[in-house]
Length: 439
Image (cartoon, rainbow, N blue to C red; front, side, top):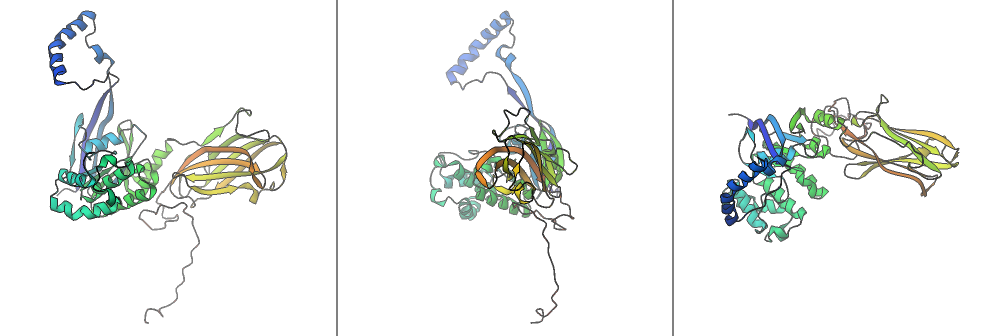
């Protein structure tokens, strides 16, 4: 028996855009249009407008010539820019929309969580929607009964299970929708970025559930812009660009390629005009940048790479200063703060008027995989209340796991835990003999 769970061959989806959107018509209006259409067409021909409003219509291929196979039990991440075609692909696989061309095969039940509202009837209660979704998947009522308590417990909305879902908040909706999709034993689970609606704790809970689903031999396709979550959950990834799968392979290498494309990454900022640069009459920024070990501007790194932060500034009034870098992760949490006064020759000393360059080295084997934002501040020495420069969100860079056994992970081949940092610490292992073995 084939172990292929999903097979897609030459899939394409064509959309018509730009033309006027027709409103829904009554039956009477439709019949009337049928009688008057020949007269309207004749009038357009006389005026030289053979196609009328259709001339304004344009087409766009949201997907084109997409082919791939996913084996049973694989967890595949689908990444790419907004509008690349990721959600369109999942909607076709979920049978929400039909492809314009190509073929697809899915083996077994398909559970999907694509966008808030999909699959639930707003007038029905949470309880009724659970049974409705189970029936759509082809499950018997006894099967749904067996899973019902587990679904409600996971969703954490037991107090509202008999309330019509139209009264649910978006977070409650997502909780129940994911719980239904994950627990009604689908052989294939399709999940879009909708999980971002939930709170951070529930997102982590969902990721753990998807991980357990894959360990049970079921298949997961996961669309997300959270590269940390993709790397934690998936072993393989597709990179979609302009409706085409341009990369298919190991998740670490595909994510690295995606981030290397410079999407939403800023590696350097320069202010040519001192009058408009961040700062005041005491200090003005000239530039901030992020470099790799080779000195080149770089925004994509592996967990083992050295990262160099650099700031150039001009002191206009002699005074003692402190220069800071704040580094936040993609969740907005501050990973660390570093300041130049702990080993600078200018610590606690007034800096003469002139230009300066500060560099800060972030060693390899320190940051975990993820996306990072850099903020730069310059304040009066020992008095942070006197802030001369506050440049927020000036740099962005990403770190991916290269799975290198010579790094922190050693020969640990499984998914690395989601953590703020990933330091390479010194361990000592001592053999103490067998005295406990025989007690």
